[in-house]
Amino acid sequence: MQEWLRLALRRDVVRRALIMALIVSPILVLINQGDFIIGQDTSRFSWAKVILTFLVPYAVSTVSSVHALRQCVDNTEN
Image (cartoon, rainbow, N blue to C red):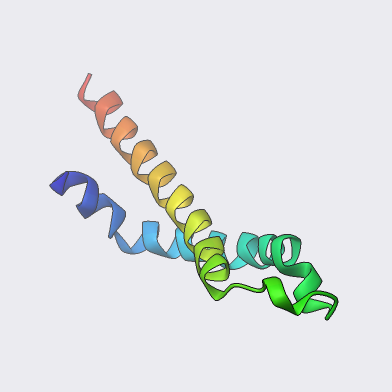
């Protein structure tokens, strides 16, 4: 677990995950909160959903990057 966290907190992994979250998340927010944004349904807006919408792409990118890094290390050791 410590190795996983070390890789997940690497500057390049964090940067890549932030970029992915900043690209993908606004699109997902528009899909999920579009009615509120265009003013048709203000009763269903949820900041919690918006925050989670940004966290999910960040987490997916981080997990993918860590997996790829670990796989590279495993391949060079064999």
